[in-house]
Length: 295
Image (cartoon, rainbow, N blue to C red; front, top):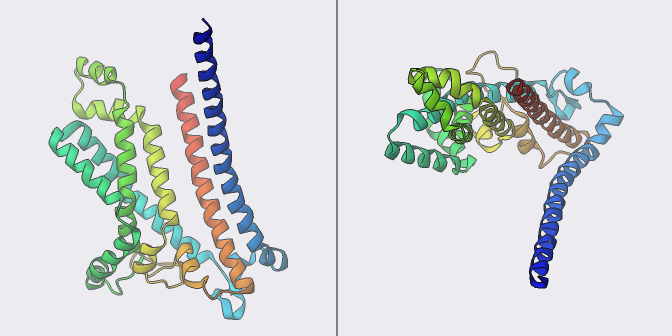
């Protein structure tokens, strides 16, 4: 009995230490995020206190030598490139997951997923280099100049497609088998089962994949820097060159000083705000979906 009690006590101590280790790691992750936000605010503070945040939206353009720091062209370029890529990658990723799970033979499904996973591991600079030497000349032959919003959208689509596809596939695989069997017993076709049962039941996971892909698209730097032309302007169509917030930071941080440097950190704060907004939207949708399913 004493030995048995010692074993239980030992396991209790291990569980206790493991629990507090996980809590400490979770607090560390949250603390690091908080430190990043504090650092961004600290570096942005000189401009925010001396000139004000409104000026980054109302200045007459992005002319650092003239103390004019309008960020709206970069904001619009960032949002258009990210949302355009999601518009293409979300249906492609979800349809690819459905193809692997319901239509493809096991051998083809296995190797298709392996190829998508390999695509997820390619560095962004490789995507950017491929886009620069292959995609941009093709677009230039179609509609000059070549480096453009369209090039950025296509490159980002390739980059976020694996994230959306793999998360969607994992979400669909978690669907209880009894749902599919019940639909088959009721005589529903394959597509009717997918449309009325699989997609509504898996929508939390699908939305998670879409918003994770969107977060990556918002934060991408090197590939966008190489294919979008880096012209500070509001694009009038998809063939216009653009500059994103991330590309602007990468291009100008090396020599920026004083207010110029502070405004680049404000760009980082704006990016953080965009990501937080999209993540919050995902949580609201997840909450509403979970609440609706429990009713």
